[in-house]
Length: 484
Ligand SMILES: Cc1cc2nc3c(=O)[nH]c(=O)nc-3n(C[C@H](O)[C@H](O)[C@H](O)COP(=O)(O)OP(=O)(O)OC[C@H]3O[C@@H](n4cnc5c(N)ncnc54)[C@H](O)[C@@H]3O)c2cc1C
Ligand code: FES
Ligand code: FES
Image (cartoon, rainbow, N blue to C red; front, side, top):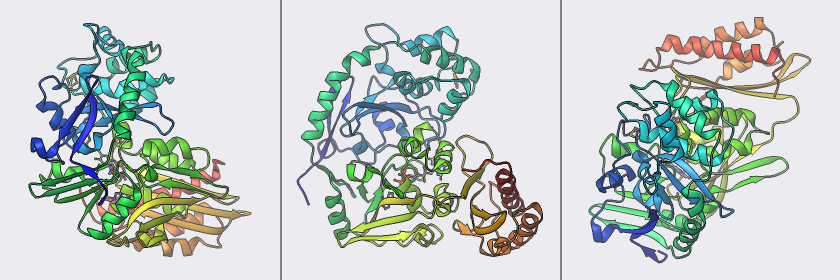
């Protein structure tokens, strides 16, 4: 293995802090929330749900972008294992006030009576902080969307939205603006002096390498490793199931996996690029992918979660798989022996199973540009719009020639143990007219094609109805000239 270190370094309260896991006997799967709450002066972040749903634990991580700027991101500290904060600045609610003066966001909360019991308030304010720093224009709808990962049970949302709007519409320089230069310098120093992080002891091994070559070598020699990228799926095994994860290979520090390339006929998305960054990069050419990402989880989840993680978790209700199938995406798998490319449709081999070999990882997702006249759409049906998992989702691709169907592909999530292609339904539509009658006939075939399960999200019969209605909605949308 390459040279490694058993400690991490991060900035907290303006100072570089070093935490040596061996010397201090700390488990590497300790969450950032648990760590902060063990400190005397950082108890503002709270635990509400320990699974990314309530936002009470929200803190901000500042990190250097590829271009060397500071990027502020709101994250759920309940889902972050400590080694992930290596090389980052942690900003908590306690850091906002300076020399006895409240931060403008805090003042706005005071002025608008936006806090009652206060349990949720630090989380709301920390989700607002990156919005304040980015100085983007916000209306009520955008604020509601950005704050969807924070729940308040007593104040009511109107004062919170009003406070957010008033402070973010007129951001002024705060003490963070003055400190940016010195924080960047410190983060660069940590980065330049870092080795891979290797922590072993107490029945746990945690390895966070610095380069892709080190990842592949380690994976080849250690087939029992559990890979984490954003850890928004895996962290729940610790926080909800209280499992002790024995052997982790953490990809979060690998810059090669955060790449994004645009070529003439395709784009290539690094498996470790956070979803929040992908959305803006794809919105012109792949608007349906951008729209799926818009409704995925919450701001805090999108800042951590990755496309690689969503694909490999192979959930029957994962949102990215049907969309990627409709776009005919390809998954690039890499091992020490080289690369292989697998169409996304062939990547899932069973319930939460993939064709990934023991020595491989997913490095990139390639999406070819859609040809002339091809219409792609994705619909997500969930109990509420924000921060919810799909009951049924559907992605469609169609090409028409004078209203005759010359290409059709239909994919559903939530209808079987894996995302599925509705082959019989497609066959009934192919070469027919794209009109209400043929679509209604296809829906009858669709209702027999799958045997979905009944669970807390929906009954089997309800799922069949949703699937049919989504196909009808797709037809309806295409006839309204919303072509993309
Ligand atoms: C509150 C909340 C809301 C959510 N909302 C949604 C939602 O709206 N839609 C949805 O689809 N999902 C949702 N999820 C699920 C989860 O966020 C996604 O599946 C996410 O994309 C996982 O990415 P990650 O990087 O966090 O994965 P991780 O947790 O790091 O890993 C997930 C799986 O992928 C494997 N893995 C990760 N990266 C690689 C790689 N490069 N190569 C090989 N294996 C890899 C891991 O071993 C693991 O098996 C939500 C989760 C939470 C907690
Ligand atoms: S404690 Fe609820 S999101 Fe973290
Ligand atoms: S102020 Fe009480 S939960 Fe929000």
